[in-house]
Image (cartoon, rainbow, N blue to C red; front, top):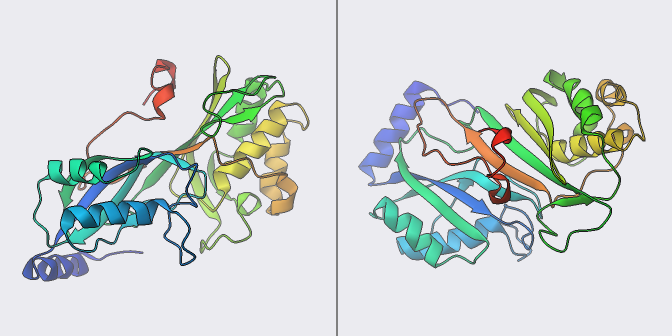
Length: 288
């Protein structure tokens, strides 16, 4: 969705006249007990509803959020960006600390900033970055059980990295999209797709202009199958070129998936934080 300069100026003028401010927030959460980001009519627990309720208490009026990426059930975030419009006058510290006081232990607001009226957390994003974390050991971990994906098969990271190279660039990713995906086009551009091992942890780090529904989990599933030597390295290219979802095998579990970063143009400077998740921040070779 494009927002023209004229449209942005009009929106800014209307918001200012009505006394509204647009606030952006950085948010991190453990998605294990939530049915995804998006508020649902069925009454199930979601991140959006939980965060809106907390912010509404701070604003003393209803708050409606827009997010940069709608994560699925069980998926985590340490770099989610959201925005909302409000007439409430609060300091940025009040938005951050006030929200956190009213939030459960598995959701945190990390920063708050006043933004211009034409900023939009979703439509102004130019890139998103995910990390998929695999615990690779014959014995399942007693800790981080829902924050990493356990794979008991020995995985060859070099094979996974070679397979990942086939997916970098601009392609039709129809073979990696879920059947219920609502994206208008399956053509996306992957800027980088790296696979690295850190002891028993394997990290798939992927940055793209946008993602299809289940795209990262389907890529992870293909790479793990190749890493287990159940398919040749070239199979990644064959799946991609088929443009048929069923050729790519099983969708990987959501547990190890994290939205770690959302990028915007320089006109929208946002506070910088580490690229997570927390338990990987000591691995300096992962980079920023």
